[in-house]
Image 1 (cartoon, rainbow, N blue to C red):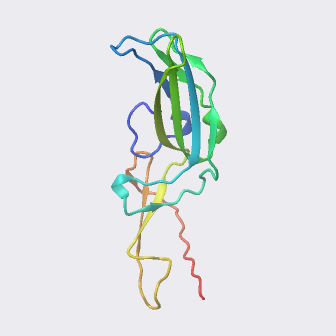
Image 2 (cartoon, helix red, strand yellow):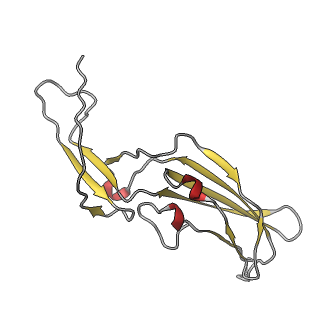
Image 3 (cartoon, rainbow, N blue to C red):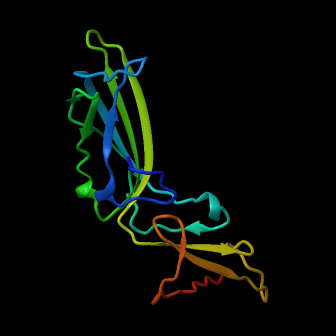
Length: 171
């Protein structure tokens, strides 16, 4: 789905869905029927290097959806590209899962491969790490929150003009 391994997320316009089919001994499997299924799911952003941080995504899809993609055929190199038409979801953040099947020349047997990737048009995400539970804070107890912003490569970046709101509920 991406040209190189991705630690964070990729923009919808950067997603490339390519299938490459090879025979057991390495020759291209040309002229093979390819079917694919795309699933878009609400995103949950978690990054290994920031395991203690919670990242809130405000433009995530609300529901999952699955779509059968147009059938295609591999070329002489055993390759085909799939049109995902992700421009329909350009302003959203979601987990893209793709399941592709390549069929034998005769018959219904196939091999399948699956890939998944976080996709977002956002330039950065803000994560929060707290020193305790914020669900209930005892009177006169202190809590601290460490905020970071990361870019699409999951690297910390400086972001200006952010606003914070403290929400307090009294019972």
